[in-house]
Length: 534
Image (cartoon, rainbow, N blue to C red; front, side, top):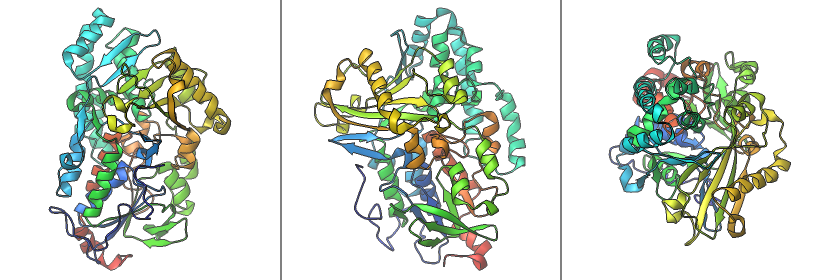
């Protein structure tokens, strides 16, 4: 069940010809150019709001029965489960979207700061309290390894350097041409982006626990710390700069808010509307065809779907000179996820909002996941307990959880129809033995999601949860471009295009569209003779 579900194909209920919100562009007139957005994840909805503010008439098409994509919301027996993102780190990106629609984020959504950000529980039971308080963090580092205190200062300084050059300077700029890459190359060189994140961390910190604690953040965007570029140390700086926040009522409240902004701007969101093909005429996107057979014309198409899936399954091969099937197939794809969502009729007040429970292996487990594509017997977990901060996520006196294990994508050949339950039991055993003793006798909700669900339900190529692995040679200009290399009028947003995964990344990808998609009036002036949708 989904907390946002309605019986109507349109969500929120669509009001034709509605007036835009104060401050939004007036673009509901029939002759405004039409933009179709495929998918209603954070990237798709953010793109729709930005395009609407630039005067475009926008239709968002969503395969599922409610908006959100990876941020879909489930509800079972009074428990509310955010399917995907649970950490909000750069609130100003949401503030910008609300402002574009003439509104304030704080009027619709309460963001609650968390302290600590999360706990990291090592296999020996030792716990690192990871927070935004510099003095507390320094004390934690000294507790584990006094000799690493100076190295931690150097690590923070380098992470700040990567944040300024990688996030602030390059994150919201579309890498559209080789010239864009050349302009960015000095910054990449100054960050020494060819090093792995773990190698960069290890150059400053010697204790194995600290190396794990300061490098595992790349897993939040689907990257192996031993292979992902060290530029992603910026995540550490980003968290310290902006904090870690929880959206009261769940991440789905942000999805609801964005969908409402779009409706207030005069846009349309259609659920249960799966796109089966992007129509291309003489090298240009002219609309889409739905699985139902319905054809919808458009001036431009923006795909918030997985880029590999978009090119492989939605754009016919004769229209793809760059993203050929061979090129798509040979890419290195991110990990996938096994997630057990469960509720308990008992509360576990010792468990924080966010906790990482690390298994006995670190590098070796990641090698199994990313390189060997093997479903290992051991695993590490991210345990999410939103009721630690927000009682509304469960019935009174209950707790809501999910336990997420990074696993390999479908190249493992795992039959998840038979392996999901053994995996769930293995996760339960670890939780029983560590932080939730005896919890299974109190279960009040339970269901799982596997890599097969990422493939079948979310249409992710190989069931990978984050698109291409964020290696240096699969990042920035080397990642699928925000403006399609193959089809004019086709654009990409979301985790699998530039700048990458994570809520800040997908919101920045929508922002990057501003540099490659003109305002509606400019588009009309240039292309009035070629419009396909009026």
